[in-house]
Length: 258
Length: 289
Ligand SMILES: Nc1ncnc2c1ncn2[C@@H]1O[C@H](COP(=O)(O)OP(=O)(O)OP(=O)(O)O)[C@@H](O)[C@H]1O
Ligand SMILES: [Mg+2]
Image (cartoon, rainbow over all chains, first blue to last red; front, side, top):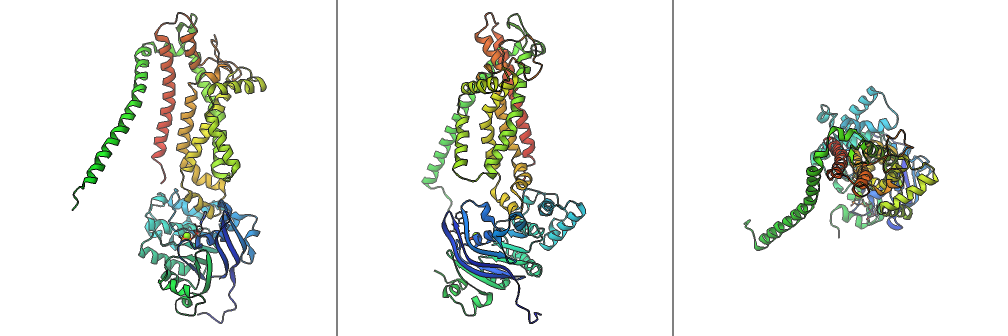
């Protein structure tokens, strides 16, 4: 399918990124590029700095006491520090958390919240967005008859898809998923994974995962973080079978670590 | 296989003992409340009548009703409510939702907690200096209510802040990540889910001010007034001060009268509290998570 593609466009470029909490280093030495319309995986053991990395991409450091970062992170070639209006930056970056967060609003309002925040008022437009996003997140059929019931009362797996629908309602250019399947059953996980594969054509996806096989199934390229250090980035398949620059990467993906 | 081992039995015994201890303490707490209420009802109850609530005291306050004091207390509490709630809630929103966790915020928080511990007579003197003299409101409902409001503020702030912080952080983070501003987040998620707690705290605190005597004594409450106040710049009678006066300052007061006044005062506080409880129950029914 892929023609002799021109050099793929870089969506996010990260140079010498280091992240600190209260002056204490949490992650350092990150140099990587995330390409447009790819699923970019990030793997690494607990505490290696994956979530912190995502928080820098949408500048949530600004909302987090003590969190600072150095180096440059550019989205579409523009330094994330250059945004004067961070709400504008965040509104185009969807985020899905490890534990699903259905806001204590109706299912409808959960998905309509972001469109409303950016000024969409017309009921028919909102109806249309809500239905489209819920369909895309593979949740529509389960909730279409109870859109007015509380989002926070859905089951965990449903709430996680609600979170994805909410992220999609932002019409994001960048979708950040942080271990989204941690509280979700395997069937739902597979459903969501299928959704992600489709979404790739519309947006760029960063997928942090604890399941190396999930990265292998989904990610085009993958970065490996290890206890606060960026180890390497490469084609996902290469990390499993190809040449790796650091032997620890292979040990990690093969599950013989320690 | 699941037989109780000695340690299990021992734990169960200890569990029962603790349960008993806590129950006993609760009963100890309830007894004085019941006794007070009982005495008030038994001795003050016969005083209460429609006429008692709707006529003025007569004959050197030894006869007649409590109307001016009752209305005065209601006016004082309402004006105090109007003055303290917007400020207190806004301050709590700032401290909980906006302020960075730095030394300044911590100092302010500490100051608020200490302010809550200041004796009411000190508030009274502050109110006298600030509202009666400096702002020249004179001894008036306005000055007295503002004094009560200042006294209620720290507690309003603390209870509001606690209700706000009971809203899970994850909800805020989810909103912020969507590009919502702090205010949008507060409006759509934080306030709707803390409003019942906020209102309960506020009403409880303000109804407490209904019983205060010292802060209003120098600032706006009168010993005896033969007329009803016409504006917030007038002095007023108040139930708490009236009770103090007829119990200690006026000769020839019939035995039951102070109990009757006290019963009206307790009744009005209970009324306000039950409004807040009913409201909270109603809101809880719609609790969102
Ligand atoms: N808000 C915070 N304040 C202080 N330290 C933090 C904070 N958040 C994260 N850290 C620290 O930063 C380091 C990286 O944490 P991070 O959450 O990014 O790891 P992670 O790779 O996402 O781990 P996990 O797989 O368990 O989610 C950890 O040592 C953690 O203790
Ligand atoms: Mg994490």
